[in-house]
Length: 322
Image 1 (cartoon, rainbow, N blue to C red):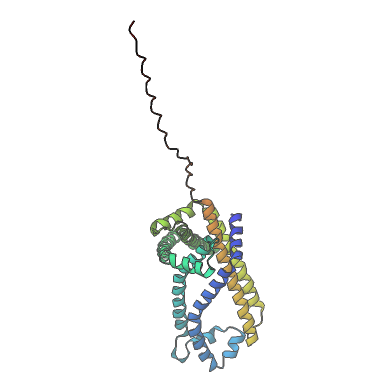
Image 2: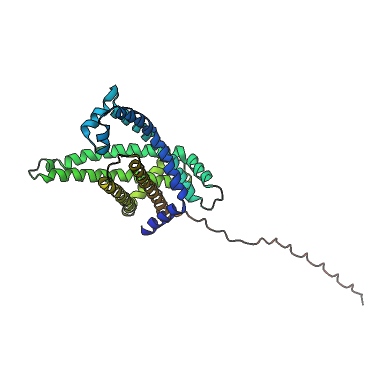
């Protein structure tokens, strides 16, 4: 597992263009909800006397008043825009994943980075979208079934006279649901890696293969994921610590500093995601190496030599009668 983690980090370091391209990619996607939200928010705050107080500290009452201002449901506007961006991000993630795998798998290719990235993204796009749909269906069905089972299993805890029992039951349900969801999401990653390696076109078989790969190597697969998720949690914790202790961004300079820090965190997240894909790919290659075809021994062809014709029999000497 350690070797795979190191290989993934080295792969992300060797391909900084991947990190910057994906950062710009999803930055552009973020503009889908950001632009309408900015126009609406700027119009509401520009005429509100409470704008200065909201900049200094968050006030839920003022925020709710502002979101309902001018007859426009601000929450609905933001939710719709965010949902649209989420759908676009879901679809484009299939393209991005294919590009990342193509770049990782063609390091000896002399063609440009952009050529390889977009070649891989286009080549695997529809197959990866189908895999994502399969994973989503399995995820919804499995989490629904597990939720029902956990509700039955933790029912005595919620009725217990010991007050923390109900909270423990909720925590247990959440942990189990996250573990089940991770199973199908990790299977999606490994199914995509398998398709990129074998160029398979049977997606149902590929996703079943990904599930089988994860289930057979559960400890290592989850261990890899936990390491990178923990790194993401540390990154988020650092940002929250800064956000909690930093003064309110009430000036343009403070807003610019906050924006730079936020983008640094986003770049860190992209780097860790690229490194995680590299680690998963290295582990998959190590666990399931492609069989090497057996070499056929070379035998020099020797033309058969025709045997020499038999020598003509010598005539018997003529006998002279005596």
